[in-house]
Amino acid sequence: MKDLILNNTDSELREITGAVLEGRRLTPDEALTLYNRADLSLMALLATTVKRRKSGDAVFFNRNFHIEPTNICIYNCRFCSYHKPEGDPDSWELSEKEILDIVRRFDGVPVTEVHITGGVHPSRDIHYYGRILSAIRNLRPDISIKAFSAVELDYMIRKAGMSYTEGLTVLRDYGLDSIPGGGAEIFDPVLRRRICREKADAETYLAIHEAAHMLGLSSNATMLYGHAETPAQRIDHMIRLRELQDRTGGFNAFIPLKFRRENNRMHELGEVPVTEDMRNYALSRILLDNFSHVKAYWPATGKNAALMSLAFGADDLDGTIDDTTRIYSMAGSEESRPTLSTTELVAMIRSAGFRPVERDTNYRTVKEW
Ligand code: V47
Ligand code: SF4
Image (cartoon, rainbow, N blue to C red; front, side, top):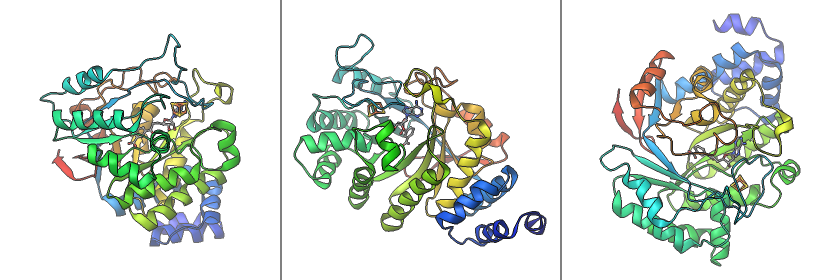
């Protein structure tokens, strides 16, 4: 098999293919050559080889729900279909009681994680969110609280006049367990200025994740792709994450987020085809050799593309969700009310030829299915 592949590629590609098969790390130039010249079947094979090295025949899933406290946001990212200014008739702002009522809906349900994220509200502060964390912690001491993107954290911590380490320590003491990957978008400064000029830049995103890792809070990393970025800018983004992961080891998963076009100011860019999604999953699995997991976030991609990504290096399907997120249905995802039962997730993973493993936030096994 290896010879068959190697004989059918040009010499530079042959060398890069050999490096991946032997487990040698790719340089940015090698990654670009691979991305530009390898056909989709070679990408699938290399990514699956790396995936199997990391997690064997397991594919993970989790039982989770989301809370989106508000869609009011001081920023105005061009790709965002979700945010509204204060006072807009389509804006929402959940009270503390409404937030806790969402948590209570899961009384007796064996979820392991709540994911909290939303707009950057101008008048909420770190202690307001901290009190919500501790109220959730009191209601459900058994579940892990993954909350606030680096962009939300940057705003609330700066507003409190604290350093990132101080702010994260305060939030950890209130009950924060880990940080989701949102807000990374694309790190390239020129493109970032075009699509989300006002919010936290790449250095801030990375500094917040680094501070979190140093405090023992794990996190995820994302990349928004399929809009105006070049393959080289995607690779640059992943390399910056790989460098931070080399220093801290604190990232659990990398999550490619496909740009969805509805109801935002980048609509005219269209969406990339599913072949591009698969090439991108594979590239990330191959390049991010120090990330244990690549997550397919099915509410964003749709179930079918998420399922297909398991043949291109993804080893995690997030999650049961239970119709608790609006970010992607508002942006045009085919999943308008995202919900999957554990039975459905297990069947999906088996249909792709893998062994379903239910995990917690930090990928400890909850149950082998
Ligand atoms: O940062 C916003 C993205 C992110 C669009 O850590 C869009 O486990 C595509 O980060 N098209 C928030 N993407 C969601 C997020 C996330 C999701 C699931 C799991 C985890 C995790 C993190 O959503 C934003 C932005 O990159 N986004 N609008 C859009 N139109
Ligand atoms: Fe606000 Fe996040 Fe939307 Fe940007 S992506 S406008 S920060 S809610």
